[in-house]
Structures are given as C-alpha cells and as structure tokens.
Length: 193
Image 1 (cartoon, rainbow, N blue to C red):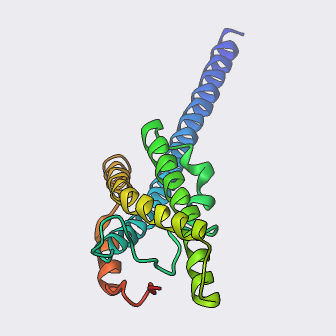
Image 2: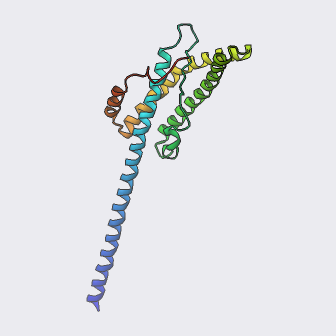
Image 3: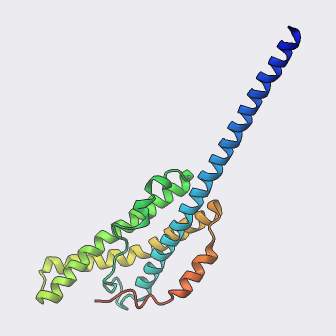
C-alpha cells in the first residue's frame, strides 16, 4: 500500500508540475503575442503620426509670408478613416504616458481638422459664389491665425509621440524612411486654394 501511495503521490506531483509548466508557457506565449500586437500597432501609429507631421510641416513651410496667415490646403489634417479610429482600443493597452500622448495628439489634430473644415467651406463659398459675409471673412482670418499658431505645437506633439513609440515599442523607422523616400513629393498630394 505504501508503494501505491508513493507512486500516486509522484503521479499527482508530476501532473501538477506539468499543468503548472503548461500554464506558465501559455501565459508567456500570450504575453509575447500581446507585446508583438502592441509593437505592430505602435509601428502603424508611428507611420500615421509621421505622415501627419509631414503634412503639418508642409502646411507650415508653405504658409503665406503675411504674419498669421496660412494657405488653405484642400486636404484634411485627419479624416474619419484614420488609423486612430481603428486602434483606439489598442492605444489604451499601451503604457499610460504613450496612451495619453497619443490621445492628446490625435485630439489636437482633430480639432485642427474641425477648423480646417470651416476654413475650406468659407474658401469654397468665396470661390463658388464670389463673396462671403464680413463675419465669415473675419472668422476665416481668425482660423488662419489659429492654425498658423497651432501647427508648430502639433509638430512638437508628433515628435514626442514618435520618440515614445521608438523608445518604448522599438518601432523600426528604417522602413518608414524608405516609404518616405519613395513618396517624396508632398506637392502632388495637396492642392492649394
């Protein structure tokens, strides 16, 4: 009977250790998979932020020489089909600083987009109908000033987000640099009005 108890004890301990080892391996694989998913999300968001930053730099560098004015670019800062909307849930899984910075950056860009929409509608009305009300004209000038002042802040926010993504999620920037070289002409992408 003692031999049976001893063998049964070894069997139970062996089963327990096997189950424990399996659980640890599954947990580690799950952690690795989650980490890889976050790295892929970070990579995609890095590209998205970098393209937005290019657009911001382009709009800033092609601004009017008059202080406080910007050319109206017939393009969007960000639209409803952007990666941010696809990855909102994944962003919340990132570390708190990076999450906060990403939400802050995209919120900032979407507020610029709202201003840009108003400006584009006033510009379109001016071009289509030939005139705008005094209020619309003054409002458009105020928006231009706001955009001109806000774009450098957006560039700073983009740089911080990109730096965080590189440092914390080991984003591969070499691939992006190749893509940027292949698509070097922003002039063809945006129209001025």
